[in-house]
Every structure is written in C-alpha cells, then in structure tokens.
Length: 197
Picture (cartoon, rainbow, N blue to C red):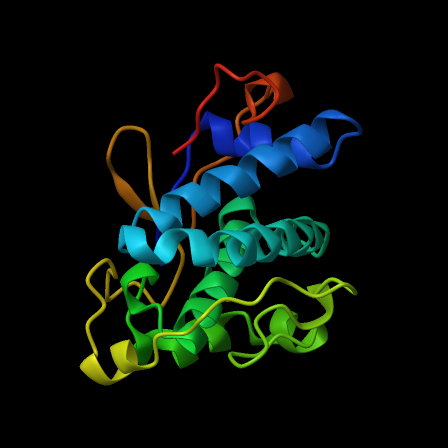
C-alpha cells in the first residue's frame, strides 16, 4: 500500500503511547480518518456511515499500538490499520472508499499474516480481538458496488511492501527513519492548530 509519512505521523506515534495527550491524539486521529474516508463517498451515504467509522477507527488505534509493541515499524503498523479498514470497506461494498482494489486483499493479508492470525484478524473479521466488547455501530452495505468492480480511489500495484511518500514527494519502500527528538505536541489533537495528512 502507498501511504504518507512525515513528522506528524512520528509525533502521533509518540503521543499515542503517552498519558493524557494519547487520548487527545486518539480522538483527533479517529475524527480525521472518518472525515477523510467519508469524503470519498457520496454525501447521501456519509451520516449513516459516520458512527460505524468512528467506532472502527477507534478500535484500530489499539491495533496500531499493539503492532508497534510487536516490533513493526511506524509505517507497517499504520499500514496494518489501513488494511483492516479496507477489509471492512470491502465487506460493506464501500469500494469507493478503498485504498487498493479488491483483488489485492489476499496479498495484503499475507504480508501481515502472522500478526493478523495472532490477533484473530481476517478479511471477514477485520478487527479480530480488537473489536470492542460493546461492538461497533452498524451501517448499511452497498454490495452492488462489488459487482460493478469499480475502485475509483484505489491505487493498485503496491501490495508487495509498504510504500511511503516522503514530504519531498519521493516514494520509498519500507518507510523513513524516525527523526530524533520528536515533539509529541505536534501530533494531531494535542494542538488544534496542528493538522495531519
């Protein structure tokens, strides 16, 4: 998958594992991801999907921290959560929100198969053990989109590794090196002036 990586992503990594600002960052990242992905679908679908996405992305923050603690890089941990989201989008037929086409689902799963199996994550159950005990809000599916086979916002051909677009616009496999002395206050949510891609 192709993702971005800049100082704000590194700050978010640091902030999410800290008391107090971790909660602020978590909430801001959830809001931000919900907004981004709702922006990829028709306005008529947005409100009925909002609560589901909020709950889902909140659960993936736990996945992200667990992946980091399991030794995955920041880019890999973040990609794992994006793959979970794409599994969920596929299951709902929300193809316009997907970041890679449906025929790459298995390839993405296999790259992180050890982590996914350890935590009960499958294509059919994208959250596995990270599913909250209270569940997540339901949202209507659009299975007819799967039959149409259109993935208008998906970028194909990046299933063999995590590809990172740097702030300079270069695309590198595997991600960038973590900068020294990252300031966690640069993470989304810590300062309302800070925005993230």
